Length: 68
Image (tube, rainbow, N blue to C red):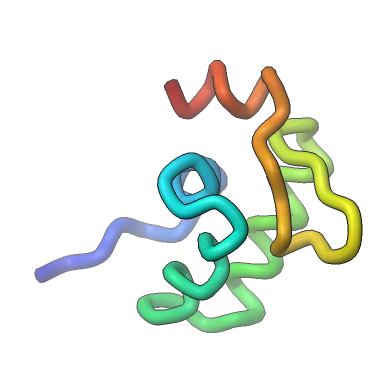
C-alpha cells in the first residue's frame, strides 16, 4: 500500500484524527526529521498551535478549516 506524500495537509489530518499521537502515527511511515519539519511549517503558517513541543500540536481555527 502506498503512503501519502508528507505535507502540511497530511500533518493536519493526522492531528485531527489522532490528536497528540499524530507524531507517533506519522513516524511509522516517514522519517522523524521530515515529520518535525512539516509540524514546524504548519505552526509557522498558523494552522496549529503548541505549548511544550511543536509535535504536540492542536489545530487552530485556520487549520480546522483547511483540513475540513
